[in-house]
Image (cartoon, rainbow, N blue to C red; front, side):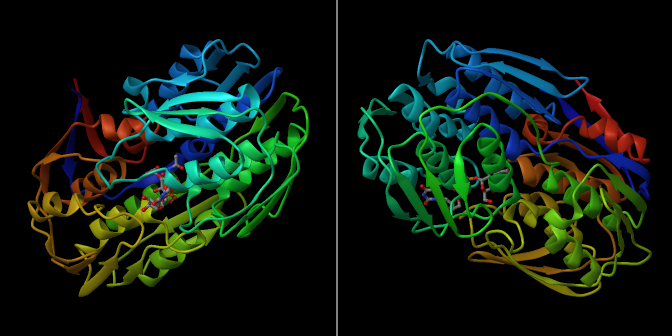
Amino acid sequence: MDKLLIRGPVKLKGRVRISGAKNAALPCMAASILTDESVRLTNVPDVADVISTIELMRYMGSDCSFDKEKNILKIEGGKLTKCEAPYDIVRKMRASSLVLGPLVAKYKKARVSLPGGCAIGVRPIDLHIKALAQMGADIRNEHGYIVVEARQLKGIKFFFDIVTVTGTENIMMAAVLANGVTVLENCAKEPEVVCLAKMLKKMGARIEGEGTDRIVIEGVRYLKGCSYKLISDRIEAGTYAVAAAITRGDVIIDNCEPEYFDNVLLKLEEAGSDIRRMKNAVKVSMKRRPKPFEIVTMPYPGFPTDMQAQFVALATLAEGSSVVKETIFENRFMHIPELMRMGADIEIKGNTAHIRGVKKLSGANLMATDLRASAALVLAALAAEGESVINRIYHIDRGYAHLDSKMKKIGARIERLK
Ligand code: EPZ
């Protein structure tokens, strides 16, 4: 398994180019199932989760070609021979459940392995299933698979008891070919949900309200292919912004949409960073130790749970005590024991972390556990005194394109060890 060797401390300086959004790529790739025509996605990130989804689409018979240099993905629609997402793919990436809605809408059936839990929590898809059942699907749980059949889905009025990003995306895709109108309430408002809705509308879907908590979809009979550019990854951009802050560097983050992670930028300003927002870039510089801050993770436009671990890393070096409350997932503090081994002073009480800033961290041998926890360890290692080795970095490769080469370009002393 690959490892990352990082020597700190460094001050990151220069320009880094952000890739397309992983969490937009996955639903938009699933949306290609809804048409018999070809779909061309651009600004597609070269990350492991995209490769896994291509593997799944090919397994189902789809014809995919991914130009990693140009970040262009072409999917020939209408070629599916299997409507199934097998366990050995889903267990690597729970977001495979996103094929459920499109498969049932277009092919009237689906057999998708239940995602099972993952490091950060149980993460059921009960609301996805409840909505599909209400749309008229017949759903059985067989040997760890969800088996869904539906002659014809019908439009419904549905309230999401919990705000769910992929739940909103899955049911929006189920509804675009359903009979009648579907009204979804308490929807996720993430930019990735809006990105998917705009792609579906380009394919001929009738959708209104994306980005608000009420989305109305009027079913149509047929969807065309399309060519569509994905939004940039606001979490990758936020991660590099924290990297600039924690190393007291000066970094320009290119090819991003600052308005999609303004909540993150505002928190960095609160911590003492200088932020200069531009049209498709943002400049982050930090001249001092961070000031302490408070965070409560919330659905968009609240502070994103996917940035929680990175800000805990920043808080470990703050001048004072910070408080970080995780309200979305029940087990998303696995970066904390690793940070404590680097000298961080953190106490966890339930879903709240109390971080007393220390003057410095020291490099250590570290274990990555999940995608964003691993990113937090990289950030801490860049600022720590001495050498760190981060193991199991396949977690990082799931959601960060070429992290080591991008970091090296802005001054990090980082090596990937095979
Ligand atoms: C999406 O996951 C993202 N993944 C996650 O990013 C992100 O952390 C999460 O949204 C929250 O923003 C993708 O978009 C591919 P949820 P998702 O459904 O959709 C509960 C990353 O780091 N819930 O919004 O799986 C659930 O347990 C990943 O890129 C139910 O109880 O998250 C959780 O507590 C990690 N029943 C909460 O809702 C359901 O049917 C929010 O989950 C669905 C969700």
